[in-house]
Amino acid sequence: MGAVDEIGVGLVGCGNIALLHTASLARIAADGVALRPVAASDPSADARASVCRNWRFERLHADAAAVLDDPDVDVVYVCTPTALHRDLYLAVLDAGKHLYAEKPIAPDFATVQEICAAGEAAPVISQVGFQQRFHALLRYVHDIVCSGELGPAMAYLYRDDEAFPTTAHNPHSSDWRSQARHAGGGTLLEHTIHGIDILTWTFGAAARVSAVTRHTLGFDVEDTATVVVEHASGVTGSIVSIYGGVTGREESRLEVFCRDGIIEVTWGVLVEGPELSMRIQRAGEQPETVSPDTVLDAMLAETGVSLRPWFWNELASRAFFDAVRAGRPATPGFRDALLAHATVDAAYRAASSGTVEEVFTIPAA
Image (cartoon, rainbow, N blue to C red; front, side):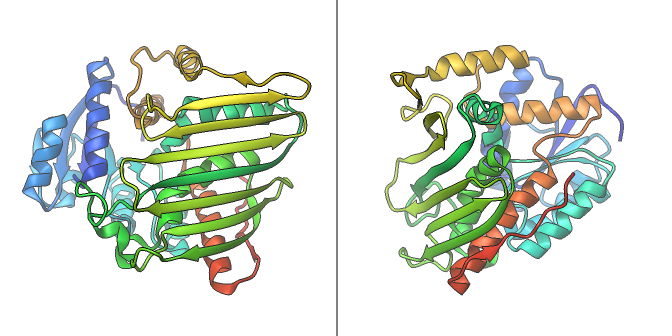
């Protein structure tokens, strides 16, 4: 599919994630990106009305097929529960539409492999919703580590916690993420796969994994996961992933230990979150506190974006539209998703077996 100028946007699924996307898309369009809100679908009329309060679509449908069949739709955002992704993703690809694929790709790894293979073979542009790739501080950490300026990376600690996004703990949530038949997994698959994408992006593919999971809140998906990862590069790391009962909090923290320095970064869900901080300790020097605003300003200047984002998926969507308009591959793509999912799959196998499990090897691109 060739490059386009004005991009006609279709939306399938009008729940909470769709509200975040449409709020971001409205801001992007108001900032001068040529977007057209063509069609949205959801079985719920109330949900369809909610997304239109953010960004008014021209046509609303109960059935996703009407969005995919619409000749004015160039790209489709799929924002449904995970168990519905397979058929919708394959249908979008079959319809010849560019795809923004929300994570996780599917509830089980075999289906993830099927979808990723189809996505990589399709003559359209697909981007996976790992929006933390566009977090200014995490990109800065990635660049520092990969540049080698602090010497080779040795190990990391990663902690990821938030209140379980289900109505038992948050009345504004939906309940499907606490049900295995819809989600496939809990905090590790639905939540920390974002961080696992960052870790594989920064340190390379994982090779071996051990893990322990717990179900303390009474749901049939895990709310606690502790994972030890050995990357093929030799870097080792520990991950603690929590879906807890403490509301009003969503915080992640990464500490990276290199031979000649240590990086500490803390962040939340919003760009301007109060938990946002970064510190670098170089060997033989005093700790340096890094200004998050300075890092974000530098990234925006580099990418030519003038409007400061309120949520990181604004920058992810801008990158997707740039790729669609230029007719080039988007990043992160399905191969990136496969790397992250392979690590999660190995963690679930390790938690079940009580042994160290090998990570499925992803062929080089």
